[in-house]
Image (cartoon, rainbow, N blue to C red; front, side):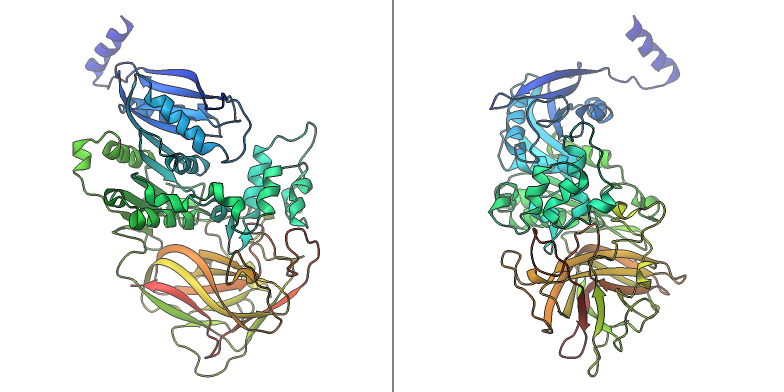
Length: 567
């Protein structure tokens, strides 16, 4: 009678009748007998349907809203606690069991009477990586995935140019490792300054074996083989929706995985079933307009759930109406003019690499110095610029404020002017642009550098400067000098010798308005987003530091330049 009254009320008041969604909590056995707990969301009126699976270490019960939405859309939704988290049995060994556990879970799902034999996976970050880990195990029934902001090579998630994303992994492990009773963690501002770096976990307050393991393997050697899926991607027959932001620490990984799938998959149909969505977001703001200190406006807002549901309607449900619609392999957001563009590939066609050259009279220190950025090369010799990189006083990744301590450094756009007042930061600026400048693609800096220490870091930021002087970062990269030629075979630097290095600033698209300036900032650290270089080359177990005098050279025979893909 209650349901009949609800139907009658809906007719009278013209309101939709919501399906009654049933939630069932179950235990799914893995091959070693460990049971993983999952919630199954179903509409009893739908006896059999495709399944959307989400596997998470962050509490499956938080997926109630998504589960009910998927069930009302005609899917069955399964949210599972990963091994050793929340209600599931076992011990969490980050990423160590996710491939096999994903396979076993999908195999179990496809045996259930309510599954029509077709399974998709969704989620971001850790929850995105488990999709790739399951996919390369080739479980029968997994036909589409939607990984957001994640990796296919875990080493490349943690390390960039030989430097480690220190605050990211230390904070993550501290939050996901059981601490001894009564132990209070040390403030991360202090703990992240610990040397040797191998003892950061003890500086935080307790032993974290996985953090130790990640920090003590700074090169992409055999230690990382089990979490390097890149060689297996080409064998997949798997439509994938890749979503990430320019400011996300996963941006390079997500974009490179898309490129690998689109260009190298052996299956021609799979190559045509990849889509990349690149927005102006960082890791915590995907789909939102406010990122760091900047609001990119309503165009930056994206309904990620709607995007994913359309993806699954196309590839999981195979809805003829959706399958008939064309889709762009790449959708990317241009910052500045704040508009979306469609493209067939990344980098998009129609853009040509062009160099902006670093120039000065040897005094490019601070934004008040003589550093210039020009399309013209130097006509003759110019004195090198120099700065002192002191590990005891590293340049922060972004300005520290009363509300933003060192440990809370932003990945997103933040006014850089406070950092550009430091004498250990070189600053090179264009004149105010006379017309808009549009670029899209992967940005890099080719620098001629030298140092008086066996090792040193070069951190490079591409910055947009408004007429009021506000300077916001667009793209960032860093390189540890001893890894300039190879991440596997480091080579120490010889005092006074000039080396050409390439610093990867990652994917970026923007239009710089007339009247604004482009700027390049160079310094010796982006702490604590990346670990400090002690400049001694002692390695992960070393405790000594040295102040490096680092130089950037920009004469005709030693050009230093920013390479922009411009239209």
